[in-house]
Length: 83
Image (cartoon, rainbow, N blue to C red; front, side, top):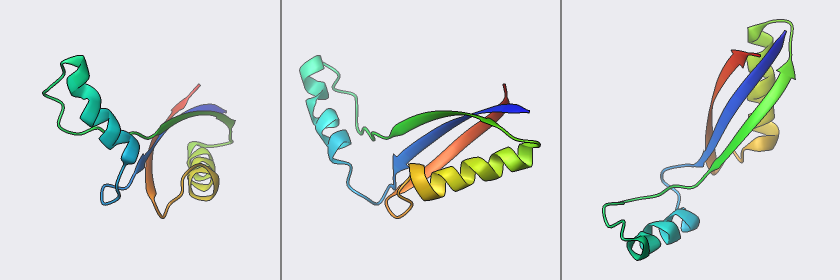
């Protein structure tokens, strides 16, 4: 079966996000004064083949924990659907 995983990787809330802080600070230059905070992360789309949904979920978990995310500094969440 073919699956598509949509993965969001974000810095953990307790860690400083310098990119997000810079963007937040500069929103006023765009006359967007109501923006209180910005956090910047990564979005990954992964196409994969697996026999079952459980196997596909395990593949995505392994990829995130061992390659895509730095689990010390980042958290991840994903949605999996059949392609």
